[in-house]
View 1 (cartoon, helix red, strand yellow):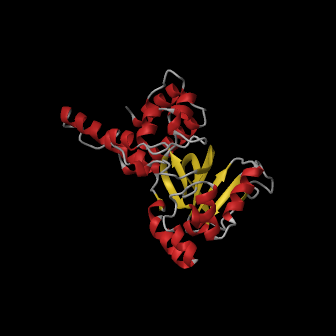
View 2 (tube, helix red, strand yellow; view 1 turned 180 degrees about the vertical axis):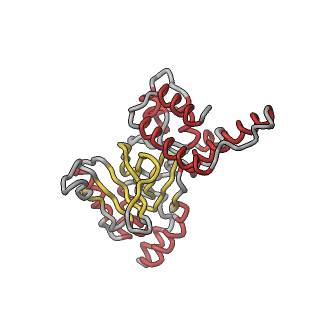
View 3 (cartoon, one colour; view 1 turned 45 degrees about the horizontal axis):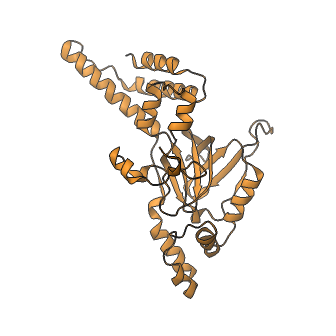
Length: 290
């Protein structure tokens, strides 16, 4: 793919022809739309947490990539298709290059309009263990979505620049995004607002126009498990056709939870570089009883 298809942060621009060719929904992937500009991209093991009913945050799925643009904040993982291709083969260029060069964590599982982030600042994460700060972790809490992100590190200058943007009033923010960062297509009715200065109309219009940027997908791990269960059932059905007496399904409910836990552990080890491709494939095959 040509370098011009990406901006200076490594975020991919729209490529409708390619998405149509691959038969995928472009809105599911992090693609800059029109004049949309990237403000920052954090790809170093960002973690997403969701608040449970007991008020505690629980980590979701895997490490991902956090991207903030003039229009939205997104948290992305490898797509189910991308993850399958990564785990299924070792490319000639080497797995490290494949993961961070050719394959991007760009399948969006959380998206939130940037203008709704105003007043929600990035800050240092609280102490982790016995009052000791184990790392320079940064957190970003979005209370109304009951979500927070933990990033292992971020330059002080970057934190300040982002928080300065988040401290703006709504009209100042839109003006800065459109004329400072050149996202000229962000708000088509700016001239109308400039005449009326009606901030309530501005907010309502932004909510309508950016509603598609606000969503949260279900667990990607569940999708992988569902695909694994489907594959396993298909294999069992084929075996049962050959041997009718073996009609008892192998994928029992109590084994599902064990499978989910073990698969999750294997994937985490693989992503952290603690398992080679061969070791992961062997362990996964053993787990699936293939």
